[in-house]
Structures are given as C-alpha cells and as structure tokens.
Image (cartoon, rainbow, N blue to C red; front, top):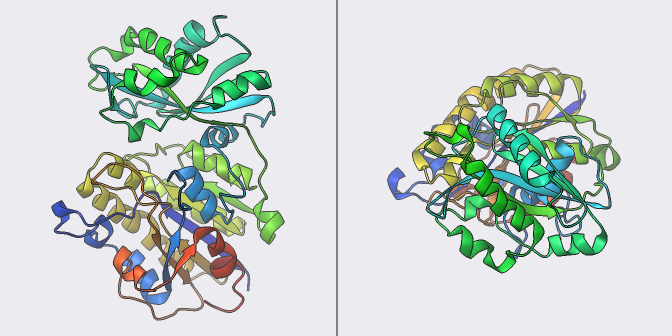
Length: 408
C-alpha cells in the first residue's frame, strides 16, 4: 500500500478572537465539518511557522511548512516569485516583488489596486517598462518588469556587486502593512536609492494612464520590496524521495514549489482572491495526487480577508474552503486503496484587528485515511493549543508527517 501526501494551506486562516463574531475567531465561528472531521480522527497540535524575531511573511512560513529551516535557508520573496515565472537564479541579479498599489492624497490606500486583473496589470507593466525602466535613465545595470498574476509581479535588476549592495540596503515593508501611511514619509530615508526613484517615477506615469479613470482604486504606483538573490533549495526528492506538485494561484507559492522540486499545475481560473475557482483547485489537487506522491495545495482567500480587516468574509472563505475543497477531498480519498495522509494548517495568522500577519503559532491537524485516531471535537486555535506543545513548523514534515511509519 503506497502512501500519498497532501498539505492544505488556507493562507492566514488563524486569528485572534473578534468582537464582531461574538468573541470567537473566524475559524471558531465558521462551520467546518471537514476540518472538524480531521481533528476528531487525527492528530492536532500547534506549530511555529515564523521564528522569533523574523518578519512574519508567507515566504518564511511556507518554507517552514515545506520542512526547511528559514534560519538556515534565508530567501527573499522577490527571488521566490522570480522562480515562479521561470526567471533564472543569476548571481549578478536582484529580484524584487512588485505590487501595483493605490495612493490617495499621498497615503497608501490599497495594496492591490482594487485587485486589478492580470490583463490590465500587464498593460500597465508594459507602460512602466517603456517609460521608466527601459528608457536608459537607470544609473547602472539592466532592469525589467515581468508580469505575474493580478497585482503581484517581479522586477529583475542585473547590476555590478557594489550597486546591488546599494539596492539591498533598502528594507521596505510590504504595502499591505503600510495602509494609511504617507508615501513620502515612508520613502524619504531612501529617496536617492535608484529603485525607490523608479517607484516615484512610476507614480507620475501611471496616474495619467486611461485605465485609471473612474476606478475607485486606481493602479497609480508600483511598490518594490523583498529584494533578494536567487538560491537553490534542497528538493523533496533529495530529502524524502518524493515527487509532487504545487497547486496555487499565487506566484510566491508556485516559486517555492519549484525551488523544492515540485511541478506547478497550471490553473485557468485561479485569482488568489475570493473569486478564485475553488473546485478547480480541488480537482487539480486530486488529479495530481493520483499521479504523484505529494501535493501542496495553497488557498489565499482567508489571508486577503484578514488584510482587509473583514472577519465575516474570512469566516465565509474558511467555510468555502471546507465545503468546496476539503470535505470533498476527504470523502474521495477515504475510498482510495492507497493510504492518504493530509496535513492542514495556515501558514501564519492574519489579524482581522490589524490587517497584518503575526508570528503567533498556528494550529495544525494531521489525518490518515487508514489509521484514524481520537482527537478533539473541532479544529480551532484554542483546542489545538490544549495539546500543550508548540513544534517548530519545519520539523513537522519529518517528525509528524512524511517519516511516520505506522499510522499516526
């Protein structure tokens, strides 16, 4: 009997108690028969996906879930997302994560430009490439913008080592953590750094773009952050002898998947937002799991609701994941002749109170189709915390999931 492995990551699902939900977390308030079944029949605990003192980003957290210590394999998300779209890990190139954002009255108003669609975003990137990046005005090296999905994109800047050191000296937060902040005040300490100058120039160019007329959240600036060099990571085949796929609508996650040796399953209707096709993701995950050993299934929607400080939408997205993804998967794989082991956990909490990621531990649950256990009645942060132990997330894959020989 062969064992198949599925990791489900509802991004940002964990949270604290919310007044609007009667003092419950969105996970506690949601109706989740699938997650609760996993808890009753599985192993529940808490894991720390973000090491203490590290900025709680999805790059660090998902790297840890994939079984790699973020302290040993430091990797900036710009380089990860570059890998997603097939850019080579050149030693003379820095890769930046690019957001298309909305600035109103000099304040950062929207980190996603109203969740701009990919087609419109690519048109804007072409304009910025022509008028700002590729017009010969850059002080050193060669740079180019590359399109991703929705508001998430990549800038590759090839330059000599001293110049790359200047670019690396800037440490800007992601725009989702800067809502309401004055752009000039945030950028003033770095106003003479070349890529910050590119950001400011983009604002002047993009504000005049006809696409923005009448939009509530115009795409009127690019935000460059999380720059880094490409690096190689140990693959799942090298560590565990596993082949696998990643199913996600987010460049960052697809990039991490590629770096650890996973194939990227192409999705047609995945947006990384509330309107993503949940059924398409479920069917893709099941098809890949039938053919391979391992699938990493990532769903972004709860994280977006957290950033928007919308606990009711977060609750709804958790219920949608349970109804359209997890419960049908559990029902189907329960009848498979192969053993199927599923790990479900958020990568980090995304607070509906602050709209930001936190580094608090997250709940996890491991379920095995051939070896049920007796666990808690439901999958929630508080019930998982009663396990009494917080495990570093990068230990989960080896100690609690892949390497377990008999049952759980």
